[in-house]
Length: 253
Image 1 (cartoon, rainbow, N blue to C red):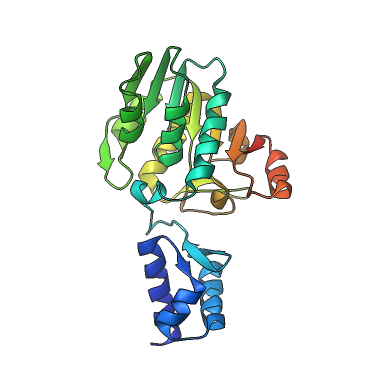
Image 2 (image 1 turned 90 degrees about the vertical axis):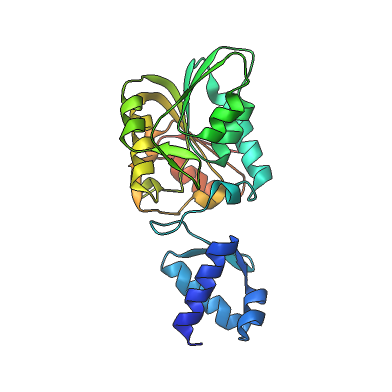
């Protein structure tokens, strides 16, 4: 197996399993750990993976996106804290958009149940969470269902959103960077997110630290478009300050 073939195999394995470890890869491919580290470095330079201590995980792109099922297994304590903190920013909002994804689903679970709320969402998972909340009215956007994320997209969803003025939008993204803003791999998903951003008076981004610095194919909002960023404490304070300089409040929990 030559170098390029090994790197392709490493990338495919990372995408299939969600992450890879240097020691295990060295054993599997019967090469030195330093060779694997070089492979991961090259893959990271090409934007295919992001390295961690002892390994790497795949970066989502136009050709690859993790499923909702996989997202429920990663960074669960951090996502739970983020969701709780984001829900506290509800303020006096009466109409709320909740994005697709696992962290937004946790936000839906954390919203207060003792007040009347109208929630707009493209996510079947979010709708299911709120379906039995007596004081919540759920408006589920129509459209083509994406099986991996269990959310609707295309013109049915964006047209429905275009008729709303929403108090607050909880927005997720596959990546957020100071240069490229909020991004996602799929143009159809990007269109729904962009319309939600346009429809909302207030916007909050909620996501774990691994989202920061990652860039996907489609940009749907700038960092300055959100009033707050809620993330975990693994985002370095200095980096959080750089995002704050662009306008939003950065909350690390």
